[in-house]
Length: 143
Image (cartoon, rainbow, N blue to C red; front, side):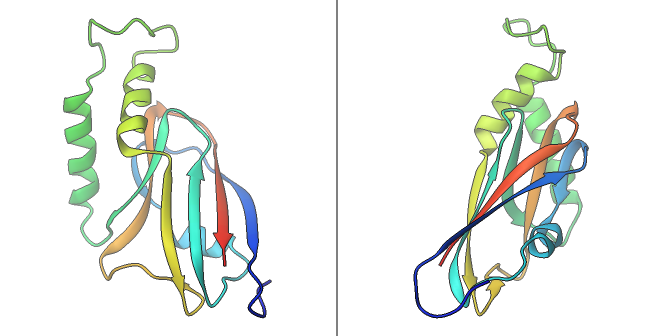
């Protein structure tokens, strides 16, 4: 897919299976979805949903994911009496707020045809609905 020194942009959209609420390590899923990577470049990952997010964090200890979930659920609780957007369920408005806090995009450098992640870093898909169904990600490589 990549050759020479010509600047390129390659884009691919993938669909994730439905995940339950939580933080799901998807680093290998992202790498496997890409046919190849350039020698050097940048990968941008964009989540096409307003109630899910993506982040980069520790991939070694699963308690990190548990603590993320616990903290954000405490910070943005379901059933908050000030919410007016409630017709899609008690988990919907909190999911929108959590998605805005975490964000829908991350950028990862590519070096020597590989994601240039730190030793303990992994890519997490963050599902903020109890069950959000399948989700779409756009993977864009700039080289």
